[in-house]
Image (cartoon, rainbow, N blue to C red):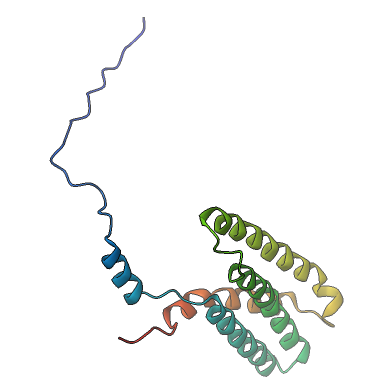
Length: 158
């Protein structure tokens, strides 16, 4: 015996407002003025500064130069791919239209990931006395700079 479930029909509502209201050209312009875009180079610069501080801090805390170099290399494994990605996104073909922008974003993200993997794979050959924990600390702390750099990004004053 088959059981049939009755599904109640959805109530028709025409009184509700649409889920979003399209902005007029003037409203969109004011929104852009209040919230200007943040340059990806600002984030890369923030990552480089934090990477340098992490490397110097690791060296100072442990007193071992190889730990500082390891943490610095971990930071470089984030900064170099991020710089390549930023350069790709700010190139002249990046904003021709929405399709090329989306495609370019995906391509440069794949280049960024491949560069990060290649740098991590080369670490044992490039850093004498590599300390993997220090490398990972440098890598993670430098990666987390995105949010701090975006929070403290320079904004235009009105």
